[in-house]
Image 1 (cartoon, rainbow, N blue to C red):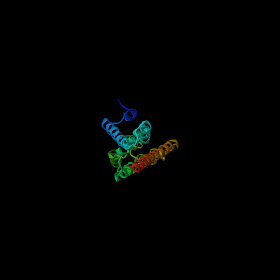
Image 2 (image 1 turned 120 degrees about the vertical axis):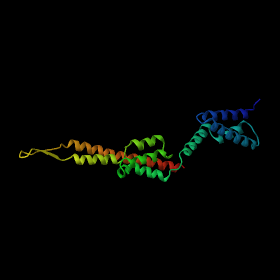
Image 3 (image 1 turned 30 degrees about the horizontal axis):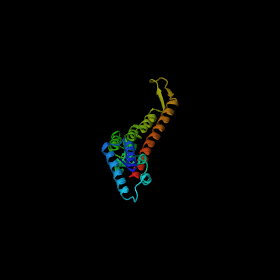
Image 4 (image 1 turned 180 degrees about the horizontal axis):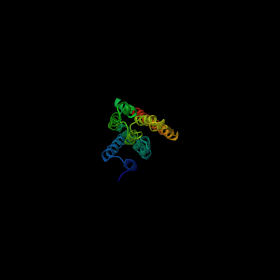
Length: 203
C-alpha cells in the first residue's frame, strides 16, 4: 500500500503529465522522468520523510503548469535560431531590390526571407505581401504619374490648336496611393527588423 508521501508524488507527476499534454510524447516522457528523478534524489536526502516534508519539496519544484510553460518557452526559443547576415540582405532586397534590379532583385529577397529560420510563416507573409516589389511599385506609379501629367493638344494643319489640361483628381489619388505604398513598404521591413532583433535577443 502506498504511503501518503508516494501518493503526493504520484499526484504531482500526473498533474505535470496533464500540463505537458501538448508536447510530443517523447519530450513529455523525458520531462516527467527528469522531474521524477529529481524528486527521488531530493527524497533520499530528507532526514525525515513525512507529508509536510514532501509537500515542501514539491512546492520548491514549482507548480506543474509553470514547469510546462517554462519548458514550452525553451522549446520555442530553440526553434528560432540566431539570425544571420543573410537576414539583413533579405530586408534590403525586399525594400529596394526591385528598384536596383527590377522584379528579380525583390524576388531574390523573398527567397532569402523564406529560407531563413529567423521569422515565422506569418511574418514571412507580411514581408512578401506588404508591399509586393517593395519601393519599386511606388516608384513605378510615380513614373507613370509624371509621364501622364500635363496638357494634351490637338488640331489639324492650318486649323486651330486645342489644348486641354488634365484635372487634378487623378494626380492627387496617385500621390495618396504612392505615399501609402511607400509607408507600407518601409513599415513591413521595419516590422521584420524588429522581430529579428527580438529573436536574436532571445538566443
